[in-house]
Length: 171
Image: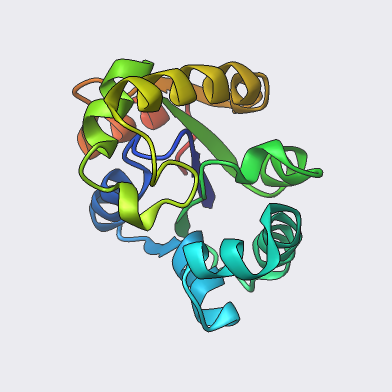
């Protein structure tokens, strides 16, 4: 089974995804790392050189054309579900899980990692919370199309496995 983890940057997709993959003995990929390898540059570098629209097109192409193994956890970029038909494609091709967190919790997680994230690198703490709040309002309609929505506060890989078993999502 393919499990796509979606949610805002900093919600724990990569951290939890790695642990979840180990727990289920699945493979794990971070879609942003696949994009960087394909593009031979960082996400920030790609944004800077080509702009967001070209990045989103490249992201869609990478997401939808990647040769996924049968059992894999995929951590998507925060914006991936919100562009083109990516959310519909993920729902059709695997299980989608939205890791939901409120803006202040996200800001707390992101404040020390801003340099690697082109959309927030120049924001102070108040600006970061405002940015997250605004972006979440835009993105949540897409995120909420996920097959499972899980509160990210205190979330562990074990809790995700429990939810998947309870929902009869795991074979």
